[in-house]
Image 1 (tube, one colour):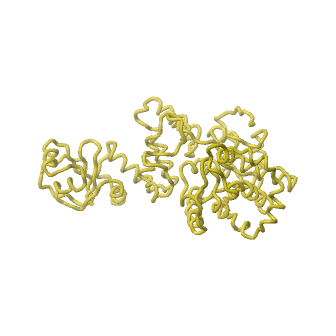
Image 2: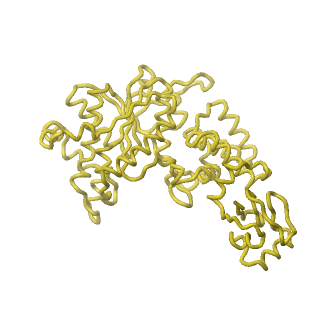
Image 3: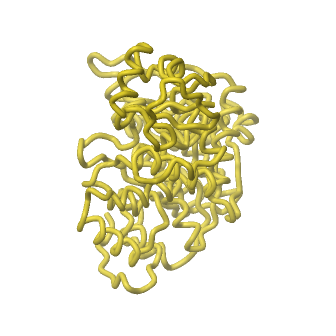
Length: 416
């Protein structure tokens, strides 16, 4: 277990202090986490690209934790699981579907690009465990590695109990052996790269410990694991990272920057302080000032606005973040539609109903802002239709391209 740290937040934080402050403390093999401050280590963390070509915002939390180690002088190695991705990390309820080598490779490239973007400026070494597993003989692996890990230790794992117990769907030998494969990754990187620390998510703790034991038994050396806690939505008590549309991805084709921005803009008040420390680079003094302002007027959502902009900028870049901020302030704030630029309308046209029809009545019907031309006339007469922020009263109005049309308070469409 970790020791409890007390420190002066006005001073520059050490790595262990910053990890505590940001909430990145879960399970670790360090008896005293201040050991992290005594020397800079080479560390690694892994990602299996078997399910999608993108990280989720759950993965982003672990990436931000790794970023703190890098900021404090640790040398990072990112392991892409070309081998483990084919097997799949065991789930509690059922076997993962088999994926092809081509799918794993394609997914891997997408995820690696995201890490390179998030860690831009850092010297990030990439490795793929397929490179060393492809030449390992089955008998050699069983004799040299399999004999080092007892069956009792593996059978005691929760996912094995859940899958093999009453009502479970069973587990294949391939998934049962997953922790041996991951443990060997740590051993290999210890031998070849001098890695002595693995970072992981809370769900990977047991698998990671397997590598520590291999290094102790085969190399008579100590290695360590540091895990990231599961991020919980305090308002619901459920795992953080889902929107009404589903999982929030970092890939813009899977979750648009606008939808990502809206997700962060609407996170719960109860957890906003935690999310700021986990998902942004905010410093202690700025955090205290922002939270003071937020708590004085929560309706202004100043903390959520800061969070939405900073995370979108981190993932998609400054220009995209500025664009979705501008769009959001026009749609849901007091910003003038005249401030939107061509790129903003391109983004809007993929988020909102759009049409190239110039006749205002036809446009309103084609974008489902109204059910009929008769209803369109009634809304116009009532002053409920506006174009680029200006109410209209002309039934024969011809809409110009790149116009934002609004009905009522929150129904929009784009004239392209």
